[in-house]
Length: 108
Image (tube, rainbow, N blue to C red; front, side, top):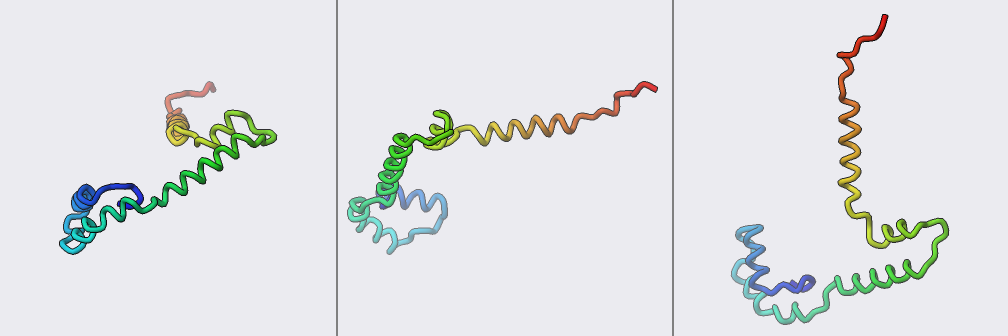
């Protein structure tokens, strides 16, 4: 509730969907009673987001010898689609290795 800013009722409902029987009477009353306090508390993610922004800005302003613009962008934003690309390459390689050559005859 605190970190994702989810109100008590949806949090309780989601918890009960994921794990029926969780959050019973006193726990539900506690969450509903303390909802405003939890929602007002700072999220742990706000500090992380600020730090990531500082690091990103620092990387953008830093010239690193031997690194291309594309590599710098990947370092900052990540390489979206990398896993799918690697899996496709592996599948193609596996397909090539599993081709049967028994139908070929060698000249004598």
